[in-house]
Image 1 (cartoon, rainbow over the protein chains, first blue to last red):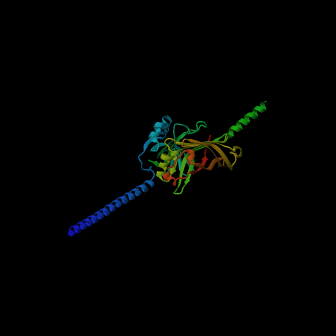
Image 2 (cartoon, rainbow over the protein chains, first blue to last red):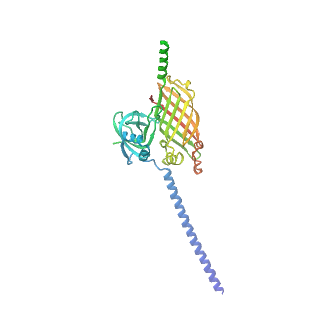
Image 3 (tube, each protein chain N blue to C red):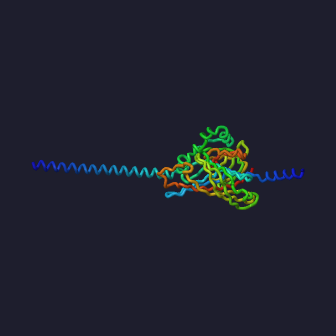
Length: 167
Length: 182
């Protein structure tokens, strides 16, 4: 009887030890998986936080002319908004003015069919060999149409930002 | 009689010659948010602004998507979550210079100015009053101003999870050169 009792106790202890060992193994695995998830999550969050701005220079662009782009915003603003706004657009047009903004970025105005209305391009890239009267290809992100002031007789411009000169 | 007609014509003509509108389509509006976790700045360099020197009318309008941030994610959150730029694409200010007589647009100088008007942003319009400086240099007009706005005044809701990242009161800086005349 004592022998049986002894065997039972031994068996029970062995099972408990085995279970504890298994449990601690399981806990270890769970902790490891959780840690991996936290690390992956952290890396992902960090990457999202530091996500770079869209690469305009090498992006595929919708190609058009300055006059056509302007007219599309005049004729059907809703459709033009869907097609162009927040997209990279490449515009071909004649430079009517070269200006500098408050932050000393070059601003090019491209000719449209409407007097005093332009495709207003704020340059991010280099602006060499740029002068009034030449026809140029400009690639940038279309921000949309900022209507002017009808009461004061000022027509609006279509805005292109982060622009680069292309061939 | 003839003399008085000539006088009236002269007065009308001289008044007309001073009645000028100065405008720019590339003015600058910046904002600055100082919070516990981080400071955030953004600039919009495509601001349309008009000053009517005869009436003192002053207007500004900008596309909200034109604000450029240091981080792309901030720009996304600003447009999608806070300003809802798709729904409210523009912010405008329409006001008047309240001390117009103190500014001589034909004489070089630095003039302190006071402006009152309606600021519309995120679909909400509030009347604001602010001070600024108008500078006339060789006939060229420029204007600057700094003021503060409270986000809750414009129903811009900041989720509690990023409450420490974004200030409740935002500093706005306006700086415009007016190269065009009408």
